[in-house]
Image (cartoon, rainbow, N blue to C red; front, top):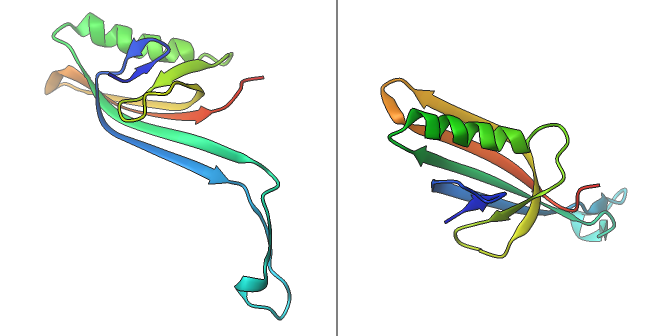
Length: 122
């Protein structure tokens, strides 16, 4: 079961993680790419994109789910613990974006996408 700040995220359809090295790359004039100067100078960052569905027969449960996630993403984030389904080691994250969709023809579900950034909040 995937959780964010202790909140059950329901059914994850997908979890995409990207660990990106912010490499300094300086190609040299009149040289091919194998002569480029590369430095691992700026560290790495990880982004996590979650797509899922929260189901409930109670509309108030779905409203609470949306409100709970939005209360974490409040403009004063201090860091939340994310625990995934595949890799269960906890990660300290901030919410970059939270998109959700409720459809009148499917009233027992909220479809969502959450983008998280891993790191130590300052």
